[in-house]
Image 1 (cartoon, rainbow, N blue to C red):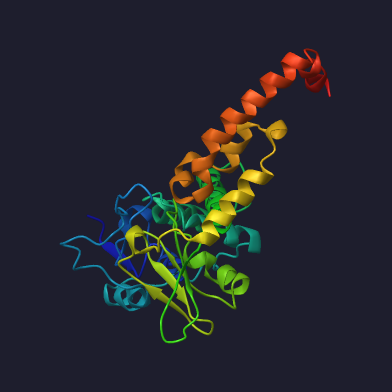
Image 2 (image 1 turned 45 degrees about the horizontal axis):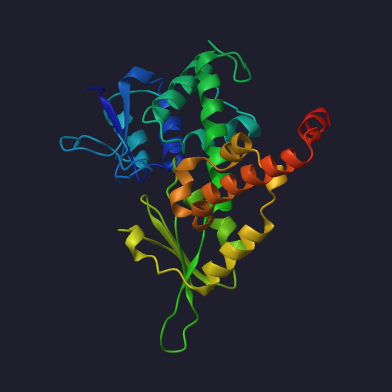
Length: 296
């Protein structure tokens, strides 16, 4: 077992990772001597727990703010001949986003790359470095998931007593640890609403003034469908254009794993079938229409 076990507060604790990594790098602690775990068990969209969750027997783990003191107590000395790493803003942002990926090796990957940059064996701007390619790929996946969460959250109103405004509740299953990263967006976007976004990871609740986190979130906490949802489905169906149906492009923008939590998704098979039927009827009336459309 590595001699240094760092316990982060949560699977998206980028700040804790940065603090611990800064001290570890200053003392030239190699990547193979560090293990990263988290206090908060976080379920991903497939229902599996994050492999960084602290397990029994990890009593030797230390918090990021304890790292410097423990290193000094162990007799380690700061390296005075190596300046601190100076990363560009883009590189720092990429690392921060990669730390939100569901890959259980993400913190190990990030720290290994940082040790190599610190040692001068790789340039921080080298786009062909294997570790950096993985980091950049992870950051892009997180960026996509942040966007998908913003696009695919669907609120349902819960009527409350005592003259309280409705509470709009949504259920979303992110593939990566993007809930907190999206909190400011939803506060700005729905400032005047009282809302809650529940996920297998954690929940966010906004009362119009303050944002709080909630735990033990389940999809059965959602209200039943109401007239507003029926109206949305009617609108979605009425604006569906069969002439622009492109199933593969639609799946790229709206992967099937999101469908179960999208009310409009249950209309898609019916609308696809109707679109094909409409197209076939048009081609029977004007046989050359399909060829001209392909050429345009």
